[in-house]
Image 1 (cartoon, rainbow, N blue to C red):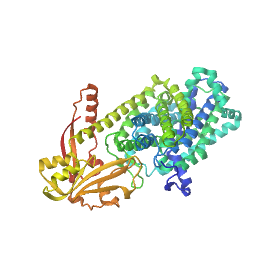
Image 2 (spheres, rainbow, N blue to C red):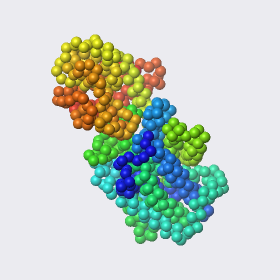
Image 3 (spheres, one colour):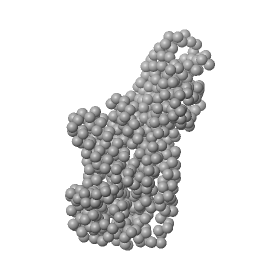
Image 4 (cartoon, one colour):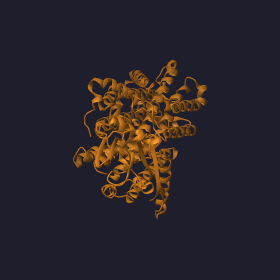
Length: 624
């Protein structure tokens, strides 16, 4: 774990990086004023008194302070994995790097699955809430809000394969303009009703909760919507660093959000809202509402793009950490490693997002489904943070309980409040997350069982060398992909058994994913010369990197002691056929699911970018 920003985040780049963070990191949380207060008013019954509006504002203010400013910006961002953040990076740091911990790995897998489940809702609710702003200046457009939203979402997902390298430069200026505009609109309203600033006292929020009992507690589910993008601050830390993200938060984003929420509350305190009114758009003069809707649409598209890009990045991390099968990943930019496209994830998210848009048809209805998955992820992050306090930072037990306990209590309250809307749509992200979590466990446990089965059918390398050192060799280099370097891969034994040959130079190539984001090129390859022209070689990648075996062997590594000619090199890869033999019916079901995933996973040759013309696949039945 590092406690200082990387060299790329040096002081001279602080402001440009902070501006970049505004466009990438803060899209989700920055567009939450479109629907948070409107949803809270709706959940409170629609007609609220001025003191109730102040109570809601106080809860929003202190949610942003406790959850975002204190928990994420101040505390959680200290728990980086060599500069990278996010729940999978934290899981890798605590669950493997500091000793394998199945509980931590399970928590990380569940948190990642929940974020995937929630990822389809954010684009739908954001775009719907923006286009719903047209209802006031152009009432006749009301029946077309859903079709227009579908067109915007279809366009967004359909263009993902082209990458965002060209248009991403516009993200930061657009989002900076967005925050300046919503902050100014809020300030103008506050100037007319300065009494709204009394809500800055936490006592106002506590009084609201105690006075309204269960009804007030349930409103917390809507209040939580103001913080749904907080997880992105941590997940995107590797792209920008802690200091730029903190500067952007305290320098622009937080003030703009507070001003806007206070301005909306000032309107509510002045006059009760109508049934279809959105106090966010009511802040704007009528003549400027259509331009504001256009700006809001651009902002929500950027927020949705950030969610989609985050899903792609998290998929790559999960694959590299062995939590998901290999799938095709397209690099869409030669300059930025983070610019990738994962077709399967894109179309799955698009399908679910469009279904949600057509079924719920309004941001008010979708709000019930939004928040449960994110609040659960934040609760799981707090649990992992307690472990980090104890095992990484070496805090005392009382101090760790006090620090993490506060966040667990707050997160648990939001989870409970959101669960009240379970049957109104909150079940959707939980079902999606449960399916993903089940598939992740099937893959990770099945992969472990397959490795054990393969290793049981092989022999130690030194025993093999002693037995076959005088074996006739044929010209060329044979590279055998191996799960370990101390035993002979099954593909080598099968090649010797059926073809009766060994190549003049043999390399047992073991590709490993380290629990750090990236590996220095000079340390990419480790080679052990076991005997004459018989090598055990490890190629190391970080969990944020895309493996490329030919590049590693030919170009990247400064420490590779062997010169390779790919035209004279054959890559031997095992292609096992899995047979389920478990006595338990439930275990056989899980094995069959793993078998299906294994059969349809991206071939190792394509995933490792090995030329197909140089590959020899050797198969055999493996019982697990």
